[in-house]
Image (cartoon, rainbow, N blue to C red; front, side):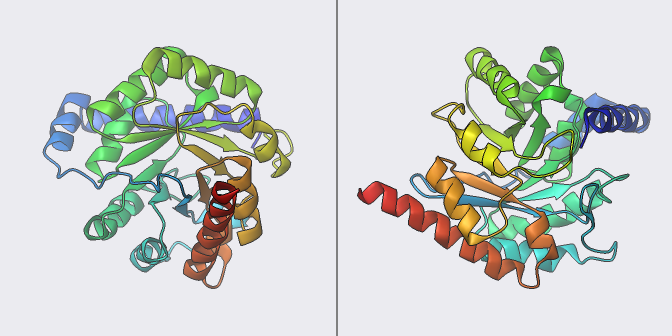
Length: 279
């Protein structure tokens, strides 16, 4: 993803918000959100390792992962039964083939299993947090470099008001410095710190960045490795580097047995944590 790509995604996201607001005001949408049963909360292993498994039909960097007829329910429930702590659902329609309907379906399927769904999109407005809550989500992802301070703070405050967690995504040291500032101003309640190892110029995943940037991650907040984790060995590596979770999409979407892969990744990462604790 290039910076130009992020700009395009932000512009398209703002247009979606504009259209949605014409159909339903934020006040109306908020009333619907407050009338919706609360989603499951995110529960993490206190000294272990967790997985956010992803539903993603397409990636601009990789191409088509699954067809539009993919059955959401068996996939997300298999993630849950494999031990995932949450399921990330792409809702961006133009480049990822996602939709709020996917989120709604996933959230409904996960509700009796006690797992939250997380809206993953190029969010630019607190309105979209309310949309996520109406669809049943228990969390949202926000890309730090896409959001000016007022929008970022409004997004976090809206998420907290609706009791949603927020995964704040960073790509480099500058993003992590900004994350430190966010935590100083707003505190860490309901926030997770993520590092995406994809190079924004070449589109390539650079797994070594996860280890390099782990040293700059804040403490006292769950730390998430994003991109570059597709095998049990890679899950073990990021656990050893100090991450508490991994967000895994393409490897699970393209694999023949995603539940087995998710379970193996969790076992490897938790074994690494147990080894470290016993030293």
